[in-house]
Amino acid sequence: MTLISPGIHHVTAISSNPQRNLDFYSGVLGLRLVKRTVNFDDPTTYHFYFGDAEGTPGSLLTFFPWPDARRGRQGAGQAAVTSFAILPSAVGFWIERFIRYHVEFQPPKSRFDDERIIGFRDPDGFLGELVAYPGAEARNGCEGRAIPLEHSIRGIYSVTLWQESCDLTGKLLTDSLGFRPIREQASIFRYATAERGTGSIVDLRCVPGLWPGVMGAGTVHHLAFRAPDSESQMKAREDLVQRGYNVTAQIDRGYFFSVYFREPGGVLFEIATDSPGFVVDEPIDQLGQLLKLPQWLEPRRFEIEALLPNIRLPMELPGPNA
Ligand code: ZN
Image (cartoon, rainbow, N blue to C red; front, side):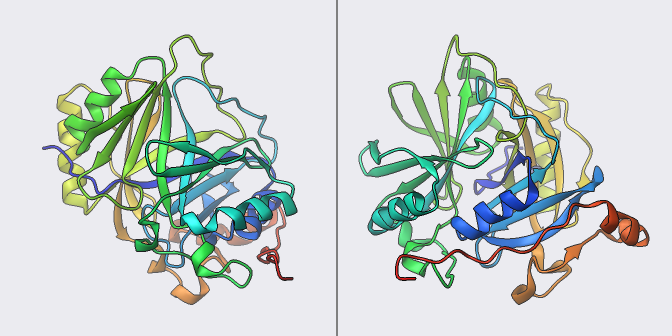
């Protein structure tokens, strides 16, 4: 059965220095650190989850900060650009903020009819965009001390995959993940889920002849789509297996259940369940404050904490009036 996914669940990327990663995403962008845990496959390294106030699926950007990671390179076969929604009235606020905190960014440009885009790079070279569009106020924001609600980032707007050829990936999105093609402009083919909202857009950008992407710091590791529950996830898994995809068994990630497979263009896809979510092991007002470990790693907490790099939780950096 086709999965009617409500859209993107999370994007997971690689960074190098964990402190610099926290300082950028919490301190400068004002995303909430909704979970501080370890990479379950390598518990000597962190896994940070950033999102909105509640860690809603579709607001989540997560990082594996590997201190020795070499810098990667965006190219074909990658989820190359991750875009976040803001209100049109917030464009000036973000330009000022990027200048103030020496963020590498591009002057705003237009895309499709009603989008204003500010492209930026994080300190590891990760490619991000702020997308201002009318209607963004319907999304959840994240009020901070320095970033008022009206200027705050409102979840993932879209992810852009750079592909040598877009046909097969487009077919996967429509046939198995519940997306439909909605428009195209130049080399960009836009797909959206039935529910237009947070994380509902995937843009396929055809880049024939472009160099292949190289995984490393500053690049996306995988892209996860939402499954409302475990049952729909397993049905989608069955469908993908029947179509010839090599899909993993269901894996317990603590905050959701996951299956993984590689899409035809080379990007690692995941299907992640909405539940149990981030309040499963700490109260909502304390999300991200403490290092959380899955139960099976608790007996090794002392050893794990000794091996993890020291970090301090960032303060959100001051805004224009400070
Ligand atoms: Zn994931």
